[in-house]
Image (cartoon, rainbow, N blue to C red; front, side):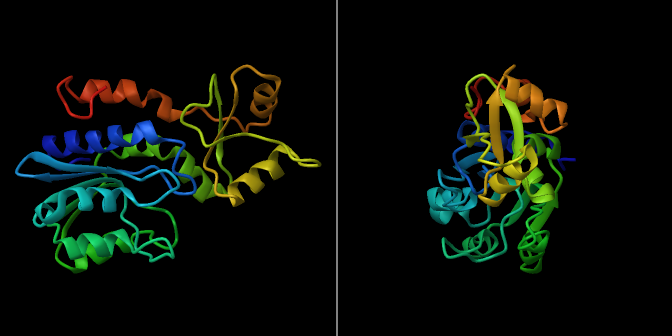
Length: 232
């Protein structure tokens, strides 16, 4: 649940900002983030193609010194781990002096898995979790599936828009081993053509999923007024 109506709207803006880049940020999830001060959006960030920089880093860089004392709305818990590609987002938020962080869902990656919000709280930053979790769950469906199963979600599509790669069977592979391989390669969202024999075969094996992100535009249109900066 969102603590207030403003939180509800700003989290919807964060989700809406991320939707256009779905399918481009592999191997990382397509996260959306919004920095707000005095009820006004001061910057927006989305994880960039290839997975870096993360959404939080993009929003902080755009806001500059105005981030101090602001509230961050983010669709997935800020990461807690340092990688060769960049510092942790939780450390960046602490350094920037953000006063409050509203998180839609906890990151199941074992390198974070609650540690990101714990680090923020330990530094006196107010943290809320669960705001618009259903929207963020749809946005991050593929990532959550891969973290839970080791396999990407595979869904039917007419054109593959919003997906990372087509589902492909290698020589000697079963559907299951192909998904295992693609998950190991970092794919979270793969597709097959709607109504194709491959789609029907995957559905028959219980491996084809409904793409919840396909309905996000409709859900967000009901939440965001036409004048909203993130509205379509």
